[in-house]
Image (cartoon, rainbow, N blue to C red; front, side):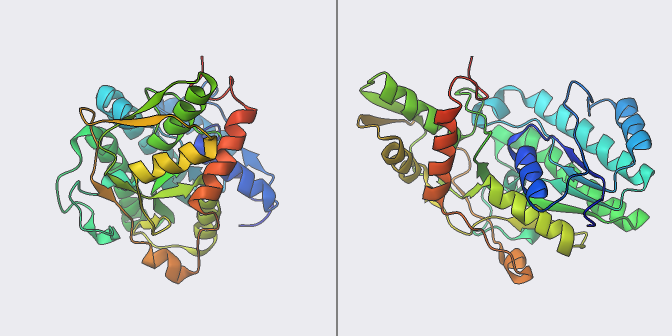
Length: 315
């Protein structure tokens, strides 16, 4: 990408989008198109097509999505399916219509089957049943990557897809009802420490295994892919390392400095038992993550403390 290329970052206020903006600006890309959801509703086809026709972006990072943890995915099933289907279809189609040079679509590792062989290789997609609690979101994301793949096949465009593992970091959502496990635990332990609570309750048995990627590392990987990857097949982005939810909780507990007990509520769902991405293809291209889990949590917790009271999920 040329330094003066016009780059549209869809979802720039979110966890991933804001990290993409940070890494683009750090590399000297300043001609960025940014619109809030109030300024541009990506679910509305006429709005999206008018935006692309007027602005004519050269590159698109499609990071906009309706996202959440197990509870949100299982509660707002219709919204997660409809909103994500509409916004991704509108942006991908409008990008094709307006002649965008390259588009990068962001998926999610939940697209893989619930009982997928581990680590999960790209070719395991659509080989088994999905995890029921997030099936609508997963189907929407599968549709998005298949849109990119088939627009490449039919129209010869350069629309690529990246499948990141579980993400966390600066500007995360810390809502206890709708967030993912890592930011939810940061907030739980922080507030338990403030309130001298005797124990912290954690959903599930603690045995589920998860892989976590610091969001600024993801943004670095996405810029790398935008510059070096031109295949129609999607590609995994992760660390290649996994940790149990119990181990994660103990790590966050130590970083926060909470000294109470941990209570695991086995009546709450664990979700997929294991989710580890095979990142061989990305490693062979020459990209590796830079931030360890402990370092990433420390940076996230520092940001959370500095912004406590105004972070997403508060109030």
